[in-house]
Image 1 (tube, rainbow, N blue to C red):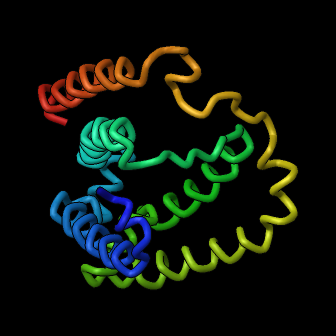
Image 2: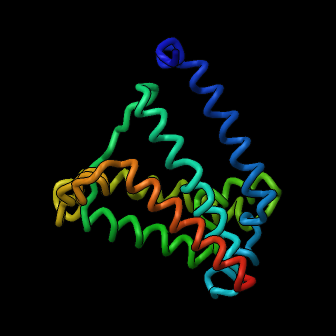
Length: 185
């Protein structure tokens, strides 16, 4: 069914652009492109961002599993390491602390016309990406390979079927979201 689509690069780009526009619209409607919402999340006063991300994960996880199970999608997993987590976390954290926006919300905020997102965020993303690309040859064999994770997925690590992880995650995630709503967060 999707084999024809996999061979059509133009259609893939058009679908990707459409999905990006839908994603931007949804995060803007959720309010997470707003600096104040992000700061209230970081101060643990407003959990809108956590609720949005948790909902996306809980909806996406079974969807990806169903696509993979029926052969419509292949997973291309890049094995992680402690080094990649630390380097990526530092880059992401510095950008988040300085601007109060992450790369996804920067694009949405630029679309809304926020000048700080355009000049601080967009230019920062370009500079950070360029700097990482320049440093990549020097760190790719060293720090990025430090303490490689031995498993590709959580089910691989635990030695159980992915469907069990999905069901457990859906139950725990729904309970977590319900708790946040119950607490008025």
